[in-house]
Image (cartoon, rainbow, N blue to C red; front, side, top):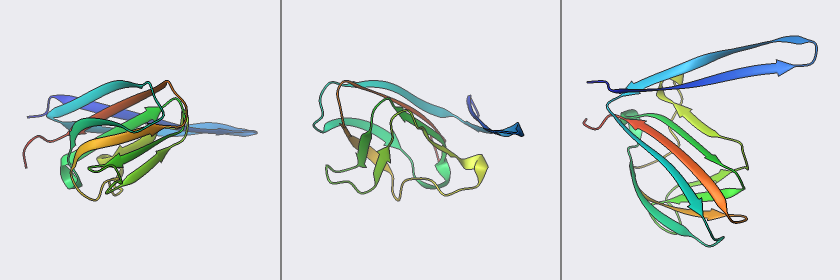
Length: 128
């Protein structure tokens, strides 16, 4: 059963050229949407279940400051560096490989400056 749909729209524009773009839509039966405030520049751990592989359908993460995310341990199985206000976006419909090498059970986030607002949107199939 599909209960949720996440859509990412990408647009290109440049001088002297008409803008163009497209959308990617993914659907699944489970989502986890978080808005986190990191009040310090030291590691902040939070539990979150994100499936790797084909069960992950959409992931969108945005931080308002430079931020490093490490998965599953404080040293990280996977490490993602987020530039300020530059989203990390993954869509299964886009046909690319997901950002995680294994299922995620926790994330350690470290902001370059505090406070930091970290927004995470996860869409995935809850059962294999």
